[in-house]
Image (cartoon, rainbow, N blue to C red; front, side, top):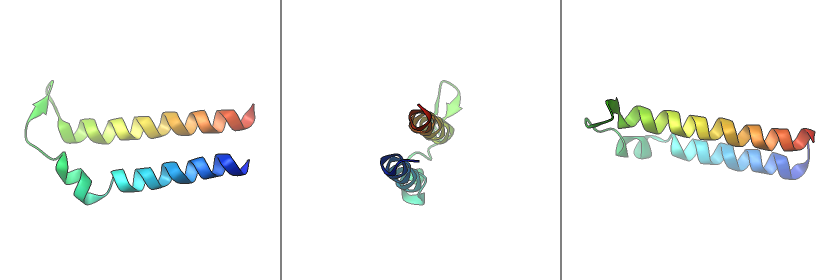
Length: 64
């Protein structure tokens, strides 16, 4: 794997570490749902989906 792809994955890891940190998670821990789904779950799964898509893009560019 190229060095720049590794660096991008490290940046993604740091972003995930910061986004799943307790103080930031507590900002989205409210009792009000959005379209019937708690905002906390929407935040968790949207960050997770974003990380999967970004890592897929980075890894696919490595194999081209």
